Image 1 (cartoon, helix red, strand yellow):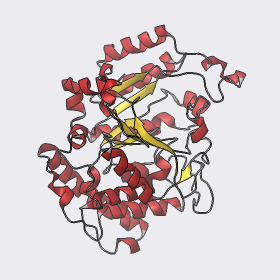
Image 2 (cartoon, rainbow, N blue to C red; image 1 turned 180 degrees about the horizontal axis):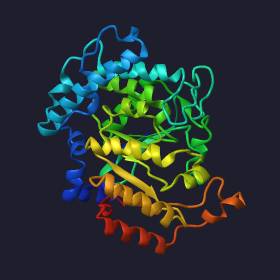
Image 3 (cartoon, one colour; image 1 turned 90 degrees about the vertical axis):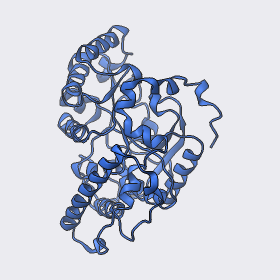
Image 4 (cartoon, rainbow, N blue to C red; image 1 turned 30 degrees about the vertical axis):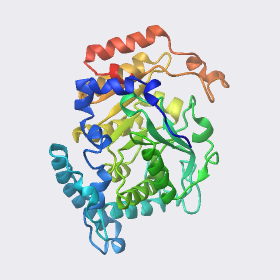
Amino acid sequence: MYHIVDWRLYRPDAVLVWRDEEVRRRLSWYYLVMENRAPAKYHIAARLEAPSDYIYMEDERLWRVHEELGKAFDDEWSRQRQRPDTSVISAAIPKASFLDVKVELSRRMLRRCLLCERRCGIDRSKTRGACLLNDTPRVASWFHHLGEEAPLVPSGTVFFTGCNFRCVYCQNWDISQRPDNGVEVSSRQLALIQIKLRSEGARNINWVGGEPTPNIPFIIESMRILAEKRINVPQLWNSNMYLTHEGLSLMLHVIDIWLPDFKYGNDSCALRYSIAPRYVEVVARNLLMLCRRGEDIIIRHLVLPGHVECCTKPVLKWIAENCPRALVNIMDQYHPDYLVPRYRRYADINRLVSELEMEEAYRYADKLGLVWRPVS
């Protein structure tokens, strides 16, 4: 790996963006953790004591314990947001903690995997699930990413292989659909990667892929190690947000800033291009949970050619009505990739997005009052 000597030369907007009052207000928690003025959420979760016999509890009871600890976490997080106090980072970690409960629940879910809404129910210790992964995470690369949204740069990005989507235009198809194009790593190695990235100046740890959802148990385990070593770094969830309610519940108390996709404005497009049933219902449900909690969030929407009316406008309208505090990245980076150039049935999206389409998307976002310019 390498050290970033002066990323400001490449992305001066990553400095200037914090002069924007709306960005500071909407990403207030992330900013405090990024600046080491508040503890990352996993520090709070690691110091909430859990029953010592949690590992012997049946699933239903353990989920009740998780819910109770979640309420205690929310109380402490609320206090931290009002009066940040980093002394929690140096506090002792109990023998059994909220983080440990999360690890146990997520590990159990791998035996009949229900982390994502594919709900394949496969025992991933024996065979690969719908995400194309077994019970060992695989990392394709990790580095300081200078191409993310300005408030995130430089972003300590960890690219997992495997994905629960089958996007026909995927620009990362070589790792999302080819899970063996990565190396197996342990939770401890994931922790060491984070420590190195943070020590070299990363503003956050950016879990992406592929898709991070299949790797929830190992990500949380790695945070336990960071908590023990008193390492403080914001955790960023860069995801298609096709998690189950249970999967999202496990991540709510350890992620400091959310970077979700909202790809489609209807289920037919989601089925055609990503083979994702009930897409709008699932993603809207998950985003609504985050927005009602007042989480820091940047919602990404990739504009597809010919899909401004059926996808872009419904997505932006939903965000304006349900997540008005969110920053929105209206992305123009689409280009035909993976299966699109190979098959005539995808000829409708075998072109770049036009300037007129992007201008229409921007005009509509302005009409809705969305804040998109600082991050688009």
